[in-house]
Length: 301
Image 1 (cartoon, rainbow, N blue to C red):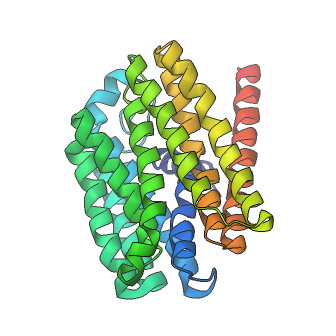
Image 2: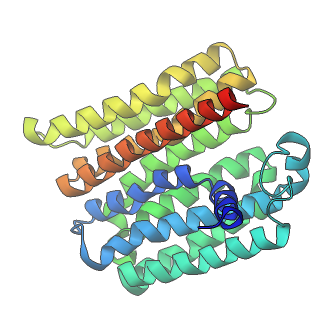
């Protein structure tokens, strides 16, 4: 691959927040586990549908925020001039269409019937809702809940509602915290996020299988989830500075993966739980490689 092509690819991967895409792959697996769907076959297209819809939302986010980012985050692909606003919008549209197509492939019309309002919610968030704190958090929570429900399809929605509520509730808390990444958050918001983590953890454990063999994976995954995000949330409540809000947001996003695994294990799907756990390991490896690359560039500069 030539230098310019490789550079353009890196720019687009940065635009769609490629590493963060891993955090949505387990949504439909958790939803499918709640409905008793096996892992495999055409249903493997559903996590890819989630990834495309998420990536499209990230591209649309940078298109919509290009004015603000020019001041607050000028290094991003759009305000830096590496990707034009028109190309960012085109990428958002193409990824959304691809995501909807994959939802139809993986779950037929029943999953597409959930994917369509999910796509609408994503675009509504980026173009309007995120400008207002409460609608922004609620809309993001709805997006994550619908992503879980896309894994069940309209015929099995009721069975996956608790899993969707857990993921949606966690997302609301993380989104509220994320608004303080630049100027700081407040103690109430950060404490509310910590309380949400405790509530979500308790709700997942309450539905765990009664046998030790079934309960242990759930307990382990919930433990990883809470340990990953709760300390940073508590620290942000103690000191609501921007750096702490940013760290709590990052950890809250990464904590979604073990939460998805816990939900899959809770519903008895070992295959789905292990698949999500593998995604978590992959995310750690990629972050470590990225950190090494950044450190090497800094030492050579």
